[in-house]
Image (cartoon, rainbow, N blue to C red; front, side, top):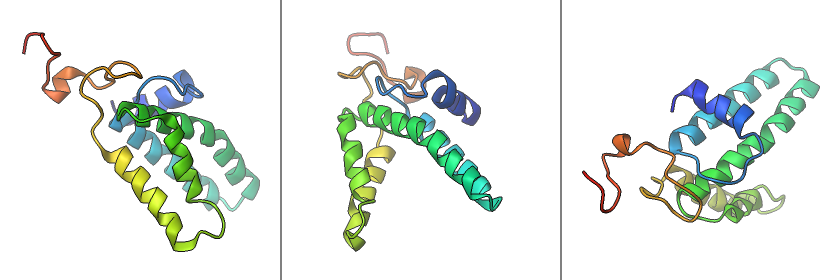
Length: 135
């Protein structure tokens, strides 16, 4: 999945879809898009625009994060761990949830179907075949 396809997928097809799985490419390309748009909006110096962009992107970013967690066979509730790192007053310890989530997001997803759905990455890319299938 490329950059434009990931952005289209997250913004238009699965804006608030917290079900299913998202590949690493989908998650990271949308992450790059979100950071780029937020930096550009903040760079304009127009605070209401920056706030609007943040509000518009928070739902699809959370949705793709939950789907990415599903790809690693983890519950979407793990996203609360990430939000705990943003709690005021936690100081240095707030980095730990962020590092754990970074590790979850960077890990390879389940190669085969799991309880959240089928593998979003094509088998040809993984070089794998289904159990009992032809190699």
